Length: 331
Image 1 (tube, one colour):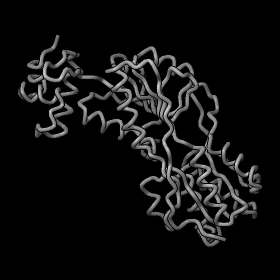
Image 2 (cartoon, one colour; image 1 turned 180 degrees about the vertical axis):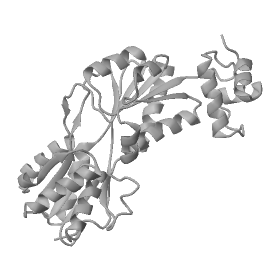
Image 3 (cartoon, helix red, strand yellow; image 1 turned 90 degrees about the horizontal axis):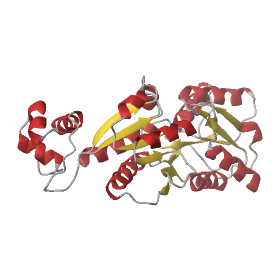
Image 4 (cartoon, helix red, strand yellow; image 1 turned 180 degrees about the horizontal axis):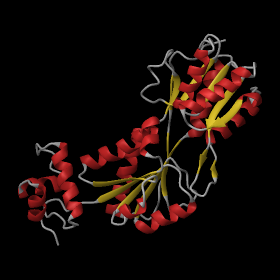
């Protein structure tokens, strides 16, 4: 079994430094790179011995990201979730193994993890395999009916009610929806609750919506193309809500290209509140999704699952907030 001295020799630091890092000593002045190197080395050497001082172990947490690295950079909602996970792990000396479904044989890198945080949408067969790999597991951004599985999702019901109440309070009665389609590994279409709730709201309150509902993908390009189709129909709604900020960015570009002014001619609302949404012209009114907090809370919960082994799984919904900027106006 590897010792602290073995880790010190391999990492090129002193045994005292290794001991203080493994015991989460926040008074130790070392670079994040050195701290991570020690954790990586401890994992590589399969160090599992508990510290006498703190009783803590070096845990290894696997992150499964259903997006590819390129998709993650294009839509930073999932990037923020991962950053929240990794920041919590860095602060608590938890070794991280990050993998993407786009990686070749990505399951192999997760064989020795103590816990898993699964980010995104997964098929039933994938969920089963993940549960067989680790005792501690949580799914982020995917509701799962199984009461034995912990999940954290967004409160879409309140979010869509809030967004639609805002638009109708401004006098809008013709409202469009631009959404995206997501498919699981078995090619099952994963339903977007935002679309379902949008339609339910419109039918309840008599909002005209049927000619203005389009779905493609959650990308800027798709938002541009869907908005172009609405423009070409020569029958625009007075407001549009997009199911992601990237879709809204694309729609805004299409409107600008045709000389249709936002919000003078049409109001536009996004969803996510990505870092770019306050820098568009005009700044985008959007619904803030607490993606970073979802990641941080998820890592915290699964860390406590490892330590306490609770018998009850948790089903958590995080509230969203309306970020009122300048892309919507009162009729």
